[in-house]
Image (cartoon, rainbow, N blue to C red; front, side):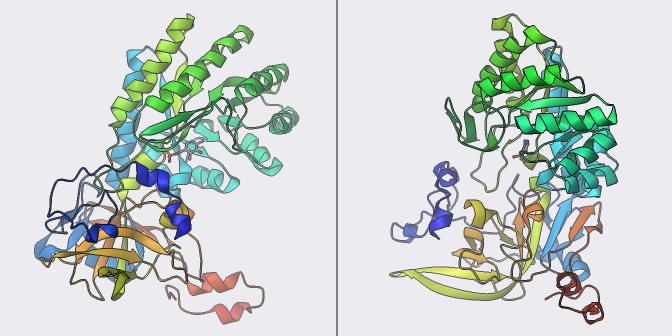
Length: 498
Ligand SMILES: *Cc1c(COP(=O)(O)O)cnc(C)c1O
């Protein structure tokens, strides 16, 4: 628990914005985070936390993308990652339009890369490239998924502070559009590889601007104690070196300043520093692009209030335009790399309730613990970052008064929490289905086999149809890597789970 509370930054952002519902009594509030307000009834699927297609139908059960949660459970089991295709596509289109129209106002172009680490599968690659996005990858594995999904190598970016020689070889071999270099050692490695292959590899230089942003605040320092990129001074030397190497072509600076950022203020500060360096470097040759990274925030709960992406895009582009204007230099094209805002709100994780107990958490204060059939193996974010999520009973509505509840997983770990604090109907019972929205980003991609738990399948829903886009793991899959298990012993039927 101490670790979870380390997520104090995240909690610091909270504002009590929800005016609905009875006031929480002073004594009770000892267990209730300041931002969580008791709802009059706990059935509402709050927008935009839930996908636009999520709705309650006859009898109060929920459908997503036109598919009933009962059908999903019966066909695919629980826990289950459900991904709403139209929602992913809509967010991809919206992000692209936001940056393209902001860029057009300044007479430049914008390219939007989908940051694949948020959620990558060949199907999702198809959706985002179909919506006109480029794709960012940061390992050989992500690169291969993007290629298998049909991504044009020329529209891929490759990140990472320790790309292996093998990874760089493969990237150059397939003709990757750009490599974001992160160290002097990598520059020499990449130059040698492109030289040997007789190609000129476009590269960006990742910069630590000293700006770190999260939600409503940013921190701007002269130095930054983290592993990624070059300092502002180091970047100038890196660019000078790249320009000496005939097998590399410097195409621009890159900075990524944080995650779950709600406005453009941190980006403005970072842009000022980037454009400063960019302007100096123009003396040595033209520089087509500045890449401002990703990190745009979403609503995990009803009190999160990120500014619309159109406003953030305008803010970033205006800041860069202003900085270029004061220095009398032309504005470069802009690239950006959103991950979370494309996929997070398209995902809902379905669980089945197994046990329910009431725990006296403090003198006279009760909390309901609702145990579901997944947990930190399918959603590591609460344990890893103290992240907040919300939950609803999706198999029915209930008009029983809501009780302060904690949705927990099935792992051998008291920090195995899915939703730390939520009001759920006091009559939650085994067999009820729980839906946790906003799980499309960094849940599947951070999933583990902790406690030898098979990872759940991912099912895409659209227009009343559901289909598996990543199959679930089986017990066979789990045993297959153990060298002490003879292959013939792992012959249990497919689909069997723990
Ligand atoms: C993680 C990451 C992103 C995407 O971040 P989101 O918060 O998902 O938008 C973009 N660029 C880089 C370099 C990253 O590491």
